[in-house]
Length: 273
Image (tube, rainbow, N blue to C red; front, side, top):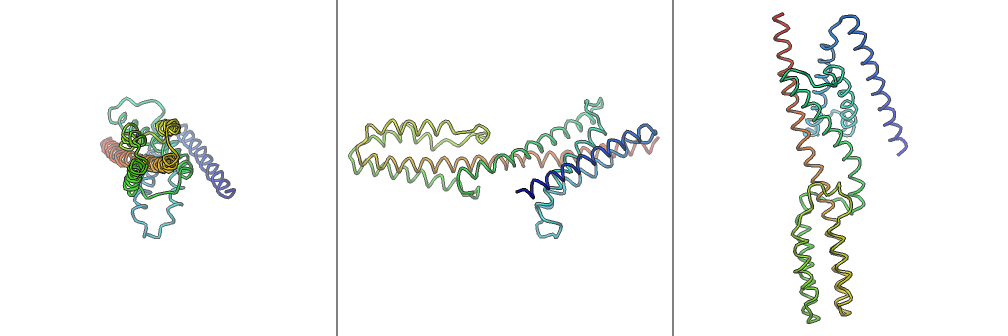
């Protein structure tokens, strides 16, 4: 853990020093009447192509091009450096041209989505680890259905063994809707599951009406509800991470298309001049 922290500090310091050096070089080039914007533009294009290559590297794991974790570190710190170069090249105020404005906004949105993804990838996995064993995303709906089937079987067992419909009524009144509900899109950001807490509270309040056998079955029911809560947490968290990628990656490729159009226009009109 100390080695990881030390490496992060070292990479952060290196990136900050590079950013300072680039800012100083941009300032000196501007004072010397050099085409500083041209230099930063080509540098930014190179950084963006490198950032986009990270996704291509993940799709080609058989290539001997460093480990995926190394590429991730390169991607993160190159992304921060690209934000600095973009600020030097385009400025912090929206430009006047229509294409330039679209390009400026596209980079800003792509950068913000990357920062959000970085925070999410650091904050969410420990929370998912606390909710239980990590599961394959595609298997979770089937596991949820299995838990619901166990709950229904337990309720029918209680009705058959005790000749009482208390737990069955509770299932129809509360649990059927609870199991039919999927966790909201932003549920991982909301903290504790309030609906699960209400269901557990209602089950606890129901215990005073249960006979001894129903109480034993209610304990098993509580364990199944906890399993359902853990599955929902895993499902919602992994779904949010996947949806973030479906936003960030298309934004990156769309940004590259706009950058290509921008470069073509710049070279085209520069050649005419």
